[in-house]
Image 1 (spheres, rainbow, N blue to C red):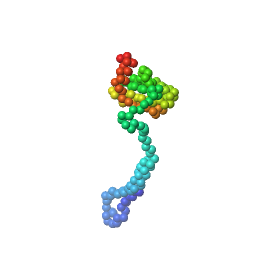
Image 2: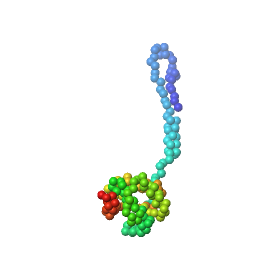
Image 3: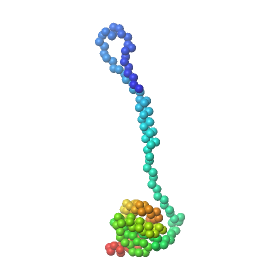
Image 4: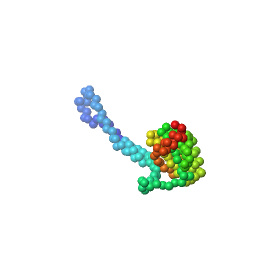
Length: 167
């Protein structure tokens, strides 16, 4: 707590009759209760705070780099994302069709509902922005599509996209 020294224990004699200079009183404050409260609040907030859980994604890699996985063409939906952000899709060996980003989720939901064994192959151009791939993966996640694969865009894919777009 706190204590104040009054200084009244001095002897009263001749010096008391003279005008004496007022003496400054000493104050002593006990800091123990304040430290206790500070540590109590610190431990309370440390124990009651919930931390953000890490978001993880399971990735299945083939055991060998040279291993090839055979997939039926009727079960393969290919999404190609060009450098400018335009999206092209096709099933199997059909020619690619251009689609907007807002039309992507309904397409994914419809295709996945009609074929539960559907595997989505996502090909993003190397010169494209990383954000495009993240947006596509978010759309796959929102459409509850868990079977998808990422592959590099090959020169044959770029030639096919140029033929479709007429450039």
